[in-house]
Length: 116
Image 1: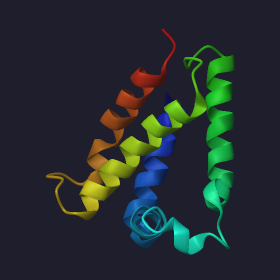
Image 2 (image 1 turned 135 degrees about the horizontal axis):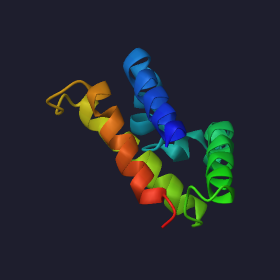
Image 3 (image 1 turned 90 degrees about the vertical axis):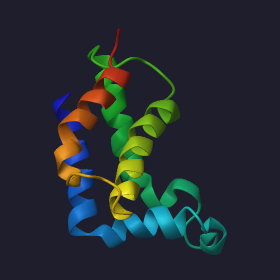
Image 4 (image 1 turned 180 degrees about the vertical axis):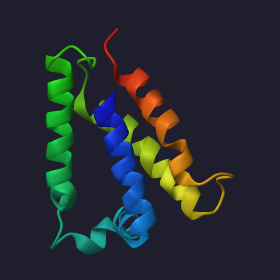
């Protein structure tokens, strides 16, 4: 659970300190992947991060903390939640600062992924 909180904190800190990084990925790369076909194929652009997340999930399953499930189902739940929150933050829809949601979001992700 602590690792999930750390990942959520890191992602939101990047969104706050360097919003152009996440804005680029959410608004430019994902919307226009065909433009990047020759220089950034598929998940290669984010492969180091994806690899770290794979290791995180594998270790969580191995120690019994996280439920064994398809990687992309777990990854999509995790990153979709964070990406969605950063997107609505960028649209100035959130009534509170983004970081005020960190603990609740980390807790929700943990309960969605934990072993039963």
